[in-house]
Every structure is written in structure tokens, then in C-alpha cells.
Image (cartoon, rainbow over all chains, first blue to last red; front, side, top):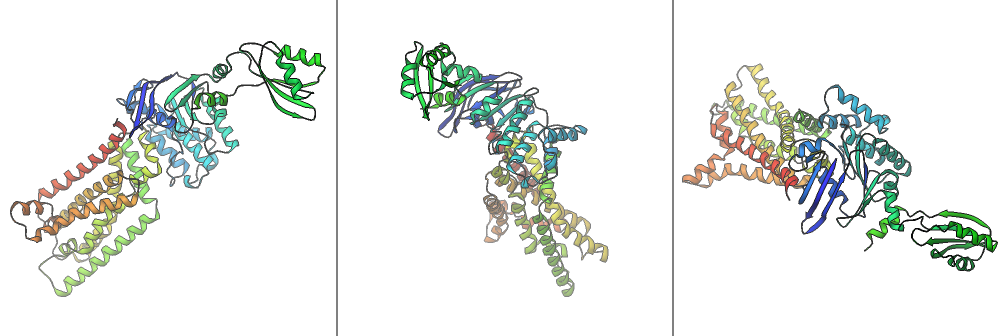
Length: 311
Length: 249
């Protein structure tokens, strides 16, 4: 659906995107992740046909974004950051205008506008003037706009920025449900969001792709395979516990996280690829401690992100 | 078809704001007062040297409105879209740049026409009531109207071009008023005692003279070519600027 080869983009005297290449297959939900200024918005604007690339080849739905811009744009539903809208129109008027502008004709216009109103939960505000809507509703109008002509590809730049947790959840559910029918490229600097929604993640930093894989694989990459750290809470002093667990053959490090009222919380990291859960339990048994938690510490996307993008 | 959708949006955006009606009312009032003043003046003094139409198209208020309307009508067009970012929504939709530019132009031209309807009605009313509006024939009136539209088109095109260069409406208005006023000022340069080819060249740009010529019922093709080609030039430049933003590398 998207193919990007060696894309570069220069702004006066500064290279914002430095030769990135990637492709997105039909049906994927791909997340662009990166700190502010990483080149996410620039790349998305190029894909949407708003900015021209400085170098490289970009094709959307098989159409070159420069040479066949019009055809490429027909296949894209784009929601820019901050969602600029005509604040003097009503929601319905705006969506009808956008649908017709994007080539929806005749009776289909009403049908599509009603469909996206329902999909994005805009029914109760459809006769309100956009200028009077809250940020959450405007965001949804932007999303409805991107969807109104049934594009193959959705490009969403920070779709949940500025929303409250309820709205974030509902937009996230909406995006996930859209994944059945559309290919989606979204950007975010909220890691949990990308982790929750995307089938694949591209981590962008200073105009380069630092990593590209599924969230699970990226997590494995960071931990070097295996299970990751084990978190235990046992009834003894932290120093005793640390010494005891450190004696296990496959343990890499033991860190004490907390100690209170006779209980200690420790995180025990195994050597790559080793399972130490059994060993931990036998030590607890031998020392006659009580155990009230043993869990796996999941390396979150956040760890990966910090690891890859630190200077 | 897409062009028509864009034009509808432009026309609506003019009529949606209450300021449009205030401007319309103000223009109608000024036209009306100006018209009545000259009507009164000509009938009282029994003047035969010039017609009411001629007096009107040579009057200060006629040109004041004509020169000031274009910057006011076009200062929003692209500047506001640039400022609010909605230009991004338009240009990422499957539309061509020239369609966007032409829609802006047609929208502005429509509202421009509406602003001059009161004056046309003044003349029409006089024709119906008195039969002959003080010497002017229908062809004189129609020629004047045509010249007015041609000039309006040129000024609006200049305004749209200025508007696409900036994200500030004020800057757009000042730029376009400056340019329009500069061109109009050439009408007076002739009186500075120019001779020879320079004088011919400047006369060619003298809208004041040309308007007067048309109001006497004389058709001259030169101003038609000048205003039309100027309009097309500025619309084309606007389209180039939008294109260039998409295609520059």
C-alpha cells in the first residue's frame, strides 16, 4: 500500500528526513513512533501529498506521490496534526463538502456522511457549528473526514493528542476496528497507544528509522530473548534476599525495588534465554520465606524507545 | 464537478459572515448617495456636457469603492487558509491547484458583482421611472458594466495572489491595496507632462480614461486585452505558487 525508498526531505539548511525506506502492506496498522522533531509529521505530509520529497521514491497504492499526485491522493484519507477545520460550518455541512470534494457523488454523499457520523459517534453534534465543538469532537470530525470517501489508506497524525482518557480509549477502539477494512499508518509519541493498536512499529529518530518490527519482537530485541526479569516479593530483609538470589547460577543481576514491613520487592534479571523461576522458588522454600508475588516484568515499548532514541 | 464544489464553498463562505451584509449595506448606501448627488446636480444645473453615467464612473466614490473592495474581499482567501492550516486539508484532497485558485476567484467575483448590484439598480430604476436616464444609452451602460467587471476581475486576481503569499490577512490586504493603487495611479501620471512613447504606454494603463471611454459608449479592445491578460497572469502566478509548494525540492 505504501512503498518508500530512500526518502529524504530538506528544510532550509536542515535535513529532517534522512533517507528512510519502508513499506506497508495492505491491512496493516503501522505505528510511527518517535520523539518530537523526529520527522514523523514531515514523512506523513509527504505521504499525503502535501509536501514534496527532496529525494527518493514514494508511492501510495501504486501511484507515485509526485508524478501521479492526484491519483495517489484519491486513495488516502489524511488527518493532519491539530485537525484544521472550517470553524464556520456545521459538522454535517463540513462532511458533505469534504465527501463531495473527494469525489463522492449523488446519493452516496448522504449515505457516507451518515455512516461516518455513526462510526465516529458524531450523531449528537452533527448540527452544531464546528467552532463551538470541544477538542475531542473536532478530533472525531477530522477522523470522520479522513474516512468519508472510503480510502484504502488512512494516514493519521497524532490521532489522540489532546484527548481525555475516555476519548483516547474510544478513538483507539475505533482505529482498531477500522483495521479490518483499511490500511492504517498512524503516528504517536504515546507508546502505550502504539503498543495497543499497531501490528507493526517503526521507531523514528532524527530522521532515521531506528527499528521496525512488531511490538512483541521489539520487546524481545531489548531483552535479548528469553523471559525477561522476574519480580518477586518475599518476607525478609532486602539484603538477605539479594544475596540469596544472586547465588543462582543463571542470574545476571538482582535489584531491590522496595522494602517495607518485613517484605522486600526484588527484580531478578536472568542471563539471556534462561528460565530462573524454578530456582527462585526453591530458594524461597529453602529459606522458609513466605512469597506473595512472583511475576514477569514485561519490557514495554517505552524501554525500547528510550534505549533506541537516547543520545 | 470538484470545481463546482469548491466554488459553492467559496460563495457560502462570503455570505455566511455578518460582515458581508454590513459591507453590502455600506456599499449600497454610498452608491445611492453618490448617485442621488449627481442626479440632483445634473438636473438642477441642466447640464448637457456629460451624462449621469459619466459623472458616476468618474466620481471619487466610484473609484474609492472599486479600489478598496478587492483587497477586502480577497484578503481572507488564501491567507486565512494558510493561517488556520485548512490549506493542508484542501491540497491533500484529490483536487488540482488551478481548481482551487479558480474557485477562489469565481467566489470573490460573485460577491463583487453582488456589491455592485445596488448601483445597477439605481440606473435601472431611473430608466424605468424616467425612460431615459439623462442621456445615457443602454449600450453605454452595458459597456461601463463590462469594464467594471473586467477591472474588478483584475483587482481580485491581484488580491488573491497577494493573499496566497502570506498567512496574515492584514499583510495580504496591504499588499494588494498597494499594488492596485499603484496601477490605478498611472491614470494620473499622464498629467505630469509626459510625451512620446512613455505617454502612450502610460495611457494604455489609465483605467480612469478607459472607464470614461466606455461610459461614452465607445468600445476599445485594448483595455479588454490588458485586464483579461492581467487577470489570467495573476491567477496563473497564484497557481504556480501553490504548485511550487507541492513540487519544489
